[in-house]
Amino acid sequence: MKPIRRLVIVVRADPVICGHSGEARCLAEVALTRGFDDVRIVTWPLDALEAAGLPLKPLDGVLPYSSGITVERPDPVGDYRVPDGRYLSGLIGRLVELFTDGVPTIAMSLYLSPHAIAVQEAVQVARSLGPAQVTTVAEAVGSDITNVVRECVNTGRFGAAAHILSVYLAADHCVAVSEYTKDLIVASAATLDAMHGTTFAQRCRERIAISYPAVDSWSYLSLTDDAITETLARRGLPRDGYILFLSRIASAKGVDDLIDAYAGSRSASRVQLVLAGRGPQEAEVVARVTAAGLADRVHILTDVDDAEKPALMAGSAAFVLPTREQPEFVETFGIALVEKALAGGGPIITCATGGVPEAVGDTAQLVPPRD
Figure 1 (cartoon, rainbow, N blue to C red):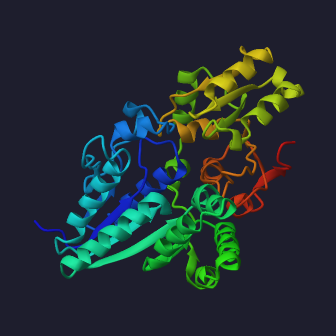
Figure 2: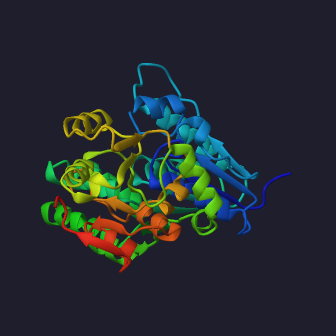
């Protein structure tokens, strides 16, 4: 039977370790309860994700989606002579097909580059072929600006910066994940305007709305003591006997600051440290732990699945995310901090960088970055 109402979400989806892949899952699940009878998450083939070096969850630990949600990973189009565009062509081609079958559709892209670009190109093609009932929502996250727009502005690459901002403003609805993110976008756009006489900043200021990331609150609020006890027993962890870091293992997350602080603290003799996640600095973290003589006190978990995460958060003595601003990254919200607040357990300790204050309000202990 032909669908009546469709939601398409374009994102780097599971198994990528990223708060926005979880956000896409949340939006998809809720859409089924809000009148959408066909929900598609359109994402990248697994081999492309692996080749990109993105931190990935174990495939067997990814939770299934509800019936009515279809995850599509379009194959690349073309051969080796089109090195990177093959995957983008496959994505755009599938979106064109979804936008031209007559089903009223809302298409949401998480990340401007390349997802909003793919949606916008597909919409243009679909509308050139005939009536296309598509409403687009482009969500900007921090790395869109720090890793793309701001970098282009700083290096004088006017065309690339103008392209991504134009694509963003072409969406029917422009949203950002925090007020901080919106301010960052407007500031970068203003710099571009001053250099080239464009008018991006004013349009961004007028059009961007705030849409905080969707979080699956029920997984955290419905935790039982038995579930926490079972998870901790499986991991060999004592309740309230460990400090937890659960995020990407990357420089911008401040893992090295946490290890150094733990090594110099009195707490190291009575609580363990659990570093859960995957990322580009795994080897460096292992070496740092070993050099500090903490191999018997620090546990590095690279295989934590979605089902375990709430219990690990709830059972911790404290949850620490010493995030810090770097040229290519700044925490523009902090989804894991909200999840931990919902899970309960020990306090949150983090840094007031980027959009973190919007995420935690007065519920966390804030310390200076790199302290």
